[in-house]
Image (tube, rainbow, N blue to C red; front, side, top):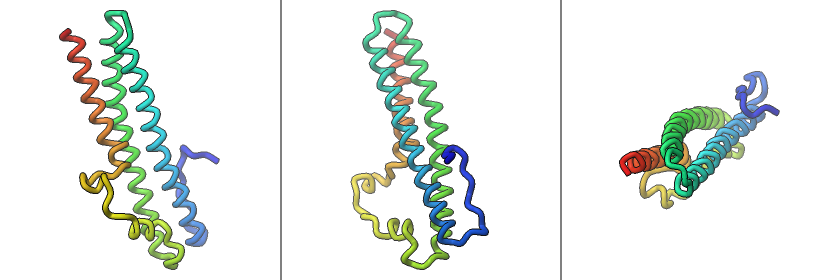
Length: 152
């Protein structure tokens, strides 16, 4: 089973099978966002450790610049992943409107989800935070670290 290539289900199959395929695609898109965030957080942790513990003079400059560039890339990749996830999620909700109410799994989850959470106070979803806001914060952090190392 290939996970990187997303092929929408054939319209010739019945709606219930089609919706289960779209659910698989939506779940995979969400998993990709989480996996990418985990990889970028791990790399950032290793880079921060390397910058703080190295004894070479030039290495912190190079590593902080690399961290900055890496996180700019994460900003673009996270935004792209978020847009793909939103497309497939909204498409799935559209397909579920044609199903009986008992089979509208994601629609029921969306309607019955608790409205009051920690993130709802800030109007930020966890997917938005992992794919967009966290990369921007860490990119700014690497920019500050790079400026501090250059001026030190």
